[in-house]
Image 1 (spheres, rainbow, N blue to C red):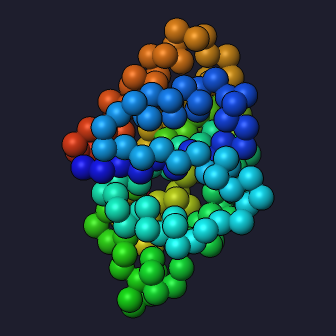
Image 2 (image 1 turned 135 degrees about the vertical axis):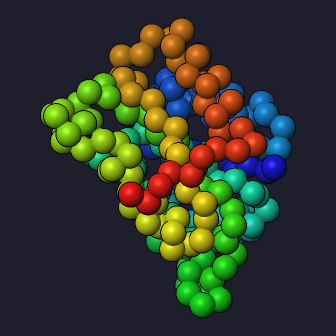
Length: 181
């Protein structure tokens, strides 16, 4: 299985966890890591190049820090540009059908805050539902996201462990899909 990891972090050099995750993924066979903010510092996206990359891979991983209950802005801009009508959606937009989509996020705050009884009233899985809806639209299998909470205060030892767990999870031959409900 060929895996494409698209890393959306506005300042990966300052990141402790997302940078480590990307570095660990880069060591793996059959994995292509694309640091999207570094590829497009001016945010002018080469749509054809991005589409070719996705066509060449079986599993697409969107890796990012969780910002304001969503993703960094370039990820949304990238989706708007790349998932074009006739390629990803529409009656002839089938280029991603059957591929797998995995979301891998780091969340700065504890899991307890992201619950129906917590400060934010919603789980991260619930807040990621727009990605699941997008997956449904583009015909990919939406895999259960890999989520790490408490990233803001995570000790270096735990960061190393989370990187190992991320690689193992993201490269498993089978990951359970997340139910639509």
